[in-house]
Length: 295
Ligand SMILES: [Zn+2]
Ligand SMILES: [Zn+2]
Image 1: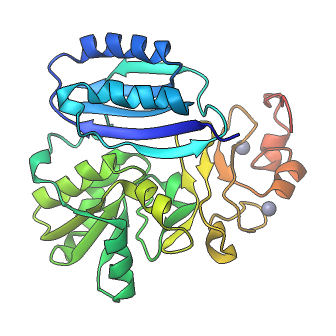
Image 2: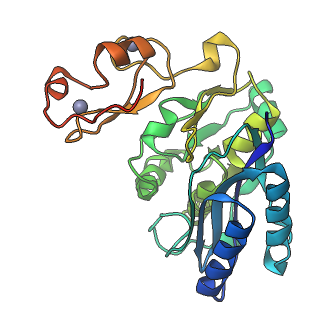
């Protein structure tokens, strides 16, 4: 029964009155049984929502009625249930937490289509591909040969840009989950004088919706209850994350069940059970362990 859809979307625009839009939008979501989270700021909108296919269609046309969103692009995924259990519509300072100051979004990097990226790889072109996501995201999935800077938050991008300085004249491709972070990250590089910068159009999401078992390796961390999506079937690139205990390939993340630790780590099923959902012997003996509901 796959009659649900998950939508991922964003658009940078100048919102005159985010508060007003926020109120109307929450009501609109409630009326159409839409769940998920939507952030609205003066700089635009950013959301991930789930709903029954027919409700999602209503939602899409509802948003497109606003002239500034008439051309908004939705990344869609079919699913067998809601992937959220609540609806949050909130006004925020920024739709992406960047805090590296004002970036001129009218001068963003060139957009690279998935088929163009494939061609870069196939032609053996010399290019640098950089993951603009956080460390825990790139640990379980990345594009072939990508640099994964291991950022703790998106704010670290300024340091990454610094480190990329030797490649200022080279071709650089940036990517993130849906494209929203790269729109800023790549614009930042352009602003810093990088000559030939691209952003993956529609992000990883757009790529894996069209190409599986190609140049994307491993899983994609998503910000809904699915946590991860595993697009590939080829064994060597299905999972690239490694179990923290035994090193076996896995994309499965858990938080250490010692609530004082809460460390996020990749584990395989066997090691998870064997270690009682904990990251160490010390955590396993903690009196403050989370009670398991199931599993
Ligand atoms: Zn293991
Ligand atoms: Zn722990």
